[in-house]
Image 1 (cartoon, one colour):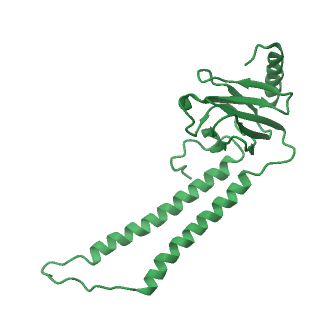
Image 2 (cartoon, rainbow, N blue to C red; image 1 turned 90 degrees about the vertical axis):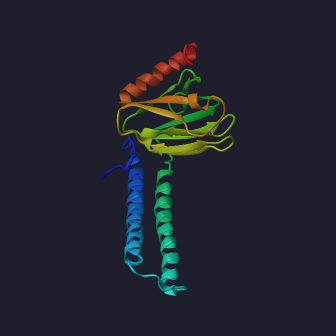
Image 3 (cartoon, rainbow, N blue to C red; image 1 turned 180 degrees about the vertical axis):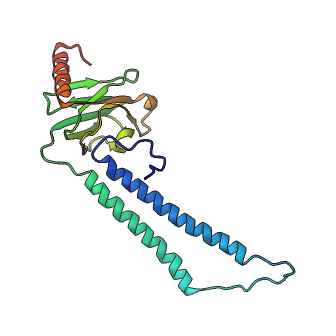
Length: 228
């Protein structure tokens, strides 16, 4: 099935559900569009003024069945959209009590800090001119805990097909399992001040053994003061 302008199919276990919701929304919108466009074309052709006609066509008002129809159908469409969106949102935002890893994401004007809370507290911090790298293990669940030290930010990795606001005083959480190794881009998706456009980070998904080695090395560099 086409992705309908979605740039990627996703690199997490949650991505297929998000992509499916996106595709379903587009299919429903196109179906409604085709029906509406068809009715418009039909009305233009069927009720056009013929050659030689000078009188106005009959003026029909207050057709109760039609009015009920075009009032009820939009409500039904909205209800269906709401149901599937609410259902998928609930499933996507569920987190487990014991994920394989916990990472605290701290947003600050205008950089990111990643703390591997369940892996010894290793930490990496970026600057507007030097984006940090968020390293994740393939095939293992990761719970993200989002904090902000100043204003509202938004944690967004396009390859995850997901973003979530980072709000001062309110810890938002979500959980994913990376399913594809590789390097991806991340950014702040909430206008947060002068250097918002430079509030970037990189994401690198690697094997669990490589992840363990990376975190251990990062912790050593933290302790020696050689890592940001």
